[in-house]
Length: 287
Image (cartoon, rainbow, N blue to C red; front, side, top):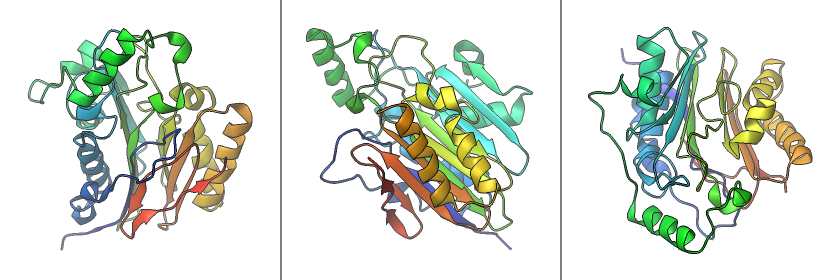
């Protein structure tokens, strides 16, 4: 008998600006919800988000300071404790490449050429959407590609998913094009376990926001630990977002799921699209 994934939740990236209409993420849920494994569900959900030209991951990715695409992704299997990430790669679906690292190598992280050597059959991605190309050209012509602008609210986005299957296995995955105008070679939190994503037998967590902040404090792991200590995922997300807000004013979001299917989501910033089996969620805004 085919087991059904009981819970999958996705997000489209926290925004520093208030959007009058949030994008629908329903297209990223239909297939994952009918998948037997939480790890499969997370990969499929993130792939769908990577294929969405309106989101900063895969096909819709932002460009770095030199006008090139550099993508990061990470995935974690809470049941086994295995995790893997890819850094600065150029495939359309880096989440699938991260899973390949997890399942076919003894490594946790592979970067650029080393990771790409595992992707001979994957669709390459050396450009982005026309909208992102025009955005880059405007910024370049206007002198806006300055490291001093790094982390401005309108430059930051990530996508991700958490999943729980009928056997109680949790998984988490995150993918991003990074920060618009970033220095070449810059790596954010998305591929790093404990920073941009976290999964254990008791909790699955993903983050969204300026990666440097999540890397410095391992925000996803902190949230996971609170859940493992018995806190509701909503309380855990709110506590860590409040703590992050005391440290930095940049936009940040956390989405979490526990082994009983309870979900939590909280953020600082303008708006954040989060969706699950019951439809769009309204994350707690703590600004």
